[in-house]
Image (cartoon, rainbow, N blue to C red; front, side, top):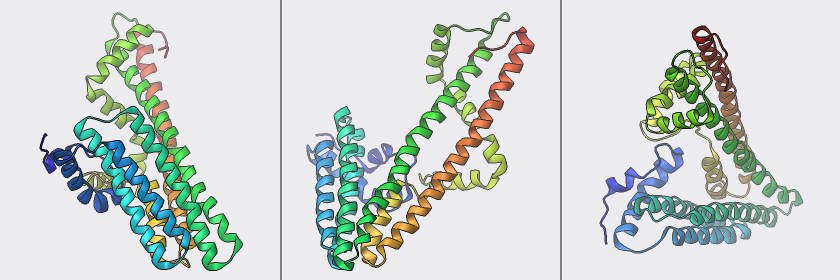
Length: 307
């Protein structure tokens, strides 16, 4: 059986992650991954199942409503999140992850979220006797749903802009003899070269951030400091929101729980809105960059660049 070091484990950690994960989870998770990978035959899917069982235990404790059980549920939920971080690291380290494992991890995460949300609402109703406590589950899920729907689509838009800009830069650089109308096959060949040449991708990335960085010069400095510790600038993401709702809130008690949901749900929306604003600025940079490329090619060949 292969023996792994902590350096091996840290090498497969995400280059950017939530501050809660980096500071409060990874120190423990990396050591557990090293032990599991070096001393056992545990698979990532088995760890995913353990994470879900911790979530079931958390929901059972939340549903009782008493502070001591809610605090215990918070511990179970955090342990489940630690296990949820372990399965991905273990899969990348041992290279034994599967496509089904990706689906299983995602599906059980969503089931755990819904289950714990309704359990918290029911426990709060038992403690307060107020029927409106039942709406808490819907509020918790709604905040997380906005984040869930917004994030992947923004990533898709950013990726599409970057790919189009990178292809345009490479096609413009490869233009010969005034020919500026590349075929689909030629564009595909350019994309293949791009995968082997990260410098062009970096150039495109910088081109999509010039407007935002010019307006907020302090952002780049803060981002560099955070990335030096692998912490992403989205300081209140879905992870921090869920940890606040299912860990901090229950520990503070039933009376504080609705306020924790409201405050961190609002912070989540603020940071999501900031991401949307940054994306809007990137679309403006993208349009300007594409127009510059078109103008350069028109002056060189006397014909518009067709994308």
